[in-house]
Each structure stands twice: as C-alpha cells, then as structure tokens.
Image (cartoon, rainbow, N blue to C red):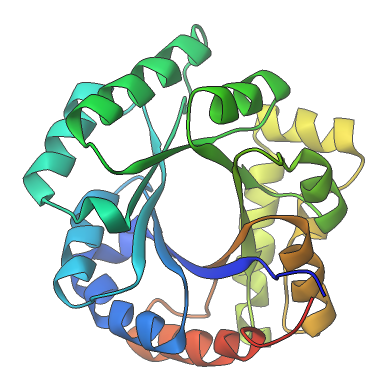
Length: 256
C-alpha cells in the first residue's frame, strides 16, 4: 500500500478573516493537514491566515498563491512579519502572477526575500510550465500545481521536492454551476488555455464533483504529496463550508 498524500483544505482569501477563523477549527478537528488560502483579488491571504492561527494549534497554514506582480517580495515579507504567523506551521506559496517578462527572476527574488525575512517557513511556487517547475524544486521548497488530471499531476511530480496540487471540488450538486463557471473562467486565460491544449484535456476534466466517488480522490492522492481540496460551495456562508468540511473528511481514511 502506498502512503496516501496529505489531504488539505483550500479557501478563497475573499472570504475574509472572520469567516476563515470560523472555519479553521473545524478543518483542524476534521484532520486536514493544511489550511490553504488563495490570495484572490479583494482578499488578503495573510490576514486570513493570521485569524486562523489565533484559533488553531496544529493545522499547517499556507498561502496559495501570492502573485508577486501584485504584491512585491518586500511587501509580502513585511505583511508576514507583521502577522507573526508561526513559522513551523507556515508555507508561503508565491507565483509570478500576470507578469509578462522576467517571471523566473521575480519568483527567485521572492524566494530569497522570504528565506531571509521569514526564516523557518516553507516557500513553494505556483508553477505551470517546465521552467517554473524546475525553479520551484531547485530553489524553492516545492511546486504548487493546479488544474491537472491525476495522470498529468503524477507526470509532473518531483521525487526530490514537495508537490502539492489544488483540485477544485464541489461536493454538493447545488454548487456545480459555480464549479463549472470557475473552470470555464480559467480555460479562458491564455496561459491556461495553451497549457490545456498541450496536455490534451479541459479544465472541467480536472475537478471533483458530487458525482465522483472516493476512487477519484484516491487517484489524486496517489499522484502527489499533498492534495488541496479547494472548496466550491453553493453560497459563501459558514453552514455551506462546514458541510463541505464534514463531507470531505470522509476521504481521510481511504487507502491508496
């Protein structure tokens, strides 16, 4: 039996610190390895994680990912220092965002700044193409992948560094329209559209829905070191997210 990947929970930064703090203890109690918070427009991943840290003790905390074209390395380091997050529980995910030139240099400077300014934290890189994936494992502490099938994720896994995969997940049929809309939005971004074309599948092929059984989750957990179930629910209120956490906890004990 292969040791299954860690199973983690992903939330959008736009939910805000208060709702994130409401959900974090439930995620910790359910046994999720890490609470990942996207640094979405209109949201603040660092502030949300600081709120979560105050009401939890064990669950790891991670940003996924902070685009360095929007928040530069120095500003990110300052925000993390002010938040005083526990470094032994912290993973900082960074990416080049919408930067059109010198993306590798921008991310490498970000890694260096975080290593110096937030010692003890892990630094992983949101990576799409092979050059960024190489930087993620040669300079950073691992790669954070997105929008992949289990087979594609397994092919991109690196044996000598941490490989994390975000999987958009809707466990309630009523949330399916939001899941489809998010998949279609990413399919429209040029970089992702080109990547889907190269790999030969669509964004909708990379999600977990209420129609999928545990075999789908098992396939993802066999492919990488950590699977982040990025929660998609019908409405952004505590009850819907708590239901998601309870339902997703059922995947914890499935053998790979």
